[in-house]
Length: 294
Image (cartoon, rainbow, N blue to C red; front, side, top):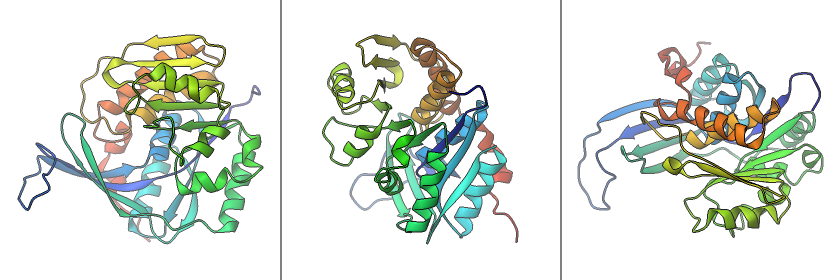
């Protein structure tokens, strides 16, 4: 890495979300429930990573499909006000979710709208952006999968968030094959160490697994293991904790931290996300929910 500030490109989803807090998730029968709380905010795994990287002083560009609609205007305004340079991929619509949530972290995500498939000229521009970066995060998405098919993209060190990878999902395979470092959670893992080991056999140099309240662990290709405890937090909402964790680790690594120290920085950054209703507390400003006036 050069001595000049690193440029990181994050490619993948950004959305406008309506979050609804319930006492319990709905049963599959006709009935009525009362919401305990409800709010709208920016969502999307790539948006979360970009927000936390910007908070940590990393020069970050978010490449994401965003429509020329009211939701897209809200997403752009919130992200740019938070210091994220948004490179929008033209889409017929902006991604939107309705998330039903409970205090214990359970969630049902309803996809109200999804982006259209990127055009070839948009992919070419996004590929050039990734190729010019010092490092890129390619998130699970149609955009990410299409970018990985481009030779110029694979010339840049790629970090990938596999989320709840089970070790065999076909959709995840191209992302795993291209990655220099992979992150995941242990939701689908009986043995996280074995899951990470199997990932490293495919080419990545580093695998990191988050375990919620149990902390996190990492495994280097040479076999060195690391473990840390979770940072105590006043849990408000677990949405985006994994994205904040990865951003914290990445920022620390770019500044030369060891794997062990990067894990500690990651856990501290995850706490910031856990203790707010939003992907990042800066989004709590009500100004961000207003679409810019023409």
